[in-house]
Image (cartoon, rainbow, N blue to C red; front, side, top):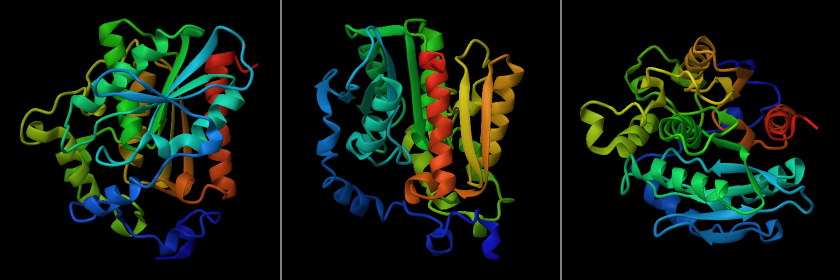
Length: 302
């Protein structure tokens, strides 16, 4: 495969595996993530929400009251990851946006399949909206990969329950459609970090008993029929991401439903490129685009 298949800034692409998560590797990766204690410099405050959920809270050094809020959801294919892994990113968001950021610690599949992770995220969203000093009319939700899928589902669930009304759904290469697992027309040589084997494993784990029956639309947002009335979206994905096609289709459906959606496509970027090669120019630009979208939604771009 020619090296120029990948974005020239992403120099590690040709050395990375096509998949990092599977049934055999999951126990090992989970053990390693237990050693992640978070960044002490982030000054995160761990707050219990209920018996199953906690949030890591990041407050800006100076903020106008009431402050905007951001519920951030960590990635990990629905099966791994911790909120502590997002400390540096969440601290950056809090300082840059003057917002209170809550990073939710939700239960993981396969031990806790749908709807448990989504309900945990909803509990975190309600908690954030009810906090003193938070403007409930200026709350955004966001995540990456599987957590981008959770953020999209959370926007749908919030619409259904009509209690909290997010002003933006920030979706980085979101995992939205279980039907992608059945595709046979995707060139596996272009995939990094997350391939069809990982995708099948992640979806089976998350869907649980529903994997072999009728998949609930809130579990796989791409199956949701009516996307009208959702908050504006920012959706970013690379052309070498397994989720590229399903993400573009979802963005198009949002737009057709009258939902403003900014689509940010990165040529030659693989799944999770901005986390793996955070210092690359294209990754920094991707982060700036996300911060700009959040700033405009939460602060009017001011």
